[in-house]
Each structure stands twice: as structure tokens, then as C-alpha cells.
Length: 235
Image (cartoon, rainbow, N blue to C red; front, side, top):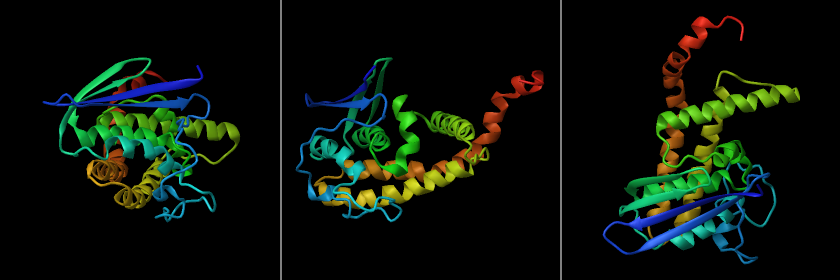
């Protein structure tokens, strides 16, 4: 498999208007394939509202912003509060949700941020590979903690320091909050309507809640493992 194909289809309720957005992610690099040519909008410049925690020192464009050009072109003309039916098609399944436009775009935006070349969202690339649209808070906590622990296993294999306390995961989400805040400024310069801006506000609210949600959910998650922990002594 050379690429992972994901399609979001928005059918506005009560209207014939329909918008589709296809995402193609390279299977090896887990980076979205973007073909917008060499001329990028000014708001994609790396220095334009560059994230305060950005480790990139030079380069013409912000990798995450480049990934968002197509979304802005597709969805900027739509109102965020409009109700829509969103259908997400992947090779494995079809997911349908009756939701608001901003929540549908929020799910798609999260995928595009994770599959960009931004080094601050690199942790989320495996989650983009196994994208689960409209995941609940509980599902996202499960996915994020599982991904984090798998990453720690591979760090151990490499001889790198590891963390099983999830402090590093909370720190990752705090870094993402900074990214979201700066990126909202880019979008305000790029967009005429509020759908994209409100979508990243939702994404940021979720990122802000995750460190606390993870801490509060660990006891509940532990209960799922009680049969295993009780009856298994060595494995």
C-alpha cells in the first residue's frame, strides 16, 4: 500500500450543496500529499504568526499551513453553525455523523495537522494512520495513551529515555495548545467566514482538556484491566 486514502463528504441539511475533500497520506512518511503548486498564500509563510515553540529556524512555509490551504479554499465560504451530514470513507469502513459544520471540519483539521510536516504534531501521525473520525473523549484517551506507550516501547528499543507516567503525553498536548493558538491567528488572516476558525477553537478546547482528562480517566481505564491484573501473574 503506497498511500492511505480518506474522503470527507459534507451534505448540508436541507440543501443540495455537497462538499467533498479527499486526503491522501503517504503510507511510509504518514504525510499528506499536497499539490498546490509553488505559489502559496502569504499566510502560509513560516514567519507569519509562527508558533512560539516552533523548532523550525528556516524554510519558506509552515508545514501545517501548507496542509490547510485546500481546506481553506474548500470550506471558507461555509457557515460554521450549519447542520450537515458528514460521511467519512476509508479503506476499512464508512463513518456517518449528523453534526455541525465546524465539528466536521474540526475532525478533518485534526487529521490534516497530524499528517503535516510539523515536528510538534509528529506524535499524532500513527493516530492519523488509524484515523477514527468523531472519536469520543474516551476513545481519544484510549488511542492517545496506547499510542504513547507504544512509542515508549520503541524508545526503549532505541536506548532512549522512556516515560510510563504519561507526563510526557500531557506535555505534548500543552505544546499543541501553543500551536493551535498561533495557528488560529493564521486562519483569521486567511479566512472570511468563521467555519475554519471555530473548528480550530474546538480542536484547541479538546487539546486543553486532554491532560486533565487523561489523569482523571486512568482509574476508569485500570478497571478494564482488573481481570487481567488479577488472574495473570507473570505476563
